[in-house]
Image (spheres, one colour):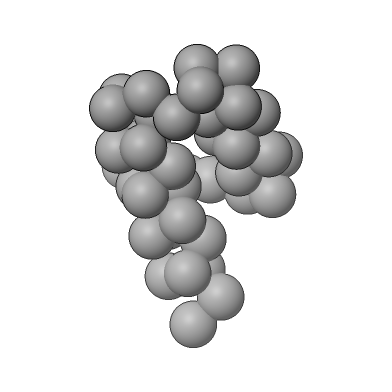
Length: 41
């Protein structure tokens, strides 16, 4: 259902910086990192 690539990871990180690590951003970043890890395994 969710598909992330390195570009999506970049956008998630960029959004985090823009939002100054808001709650929503942290959750999104964790989700992105989780999917990235799954893809690497």
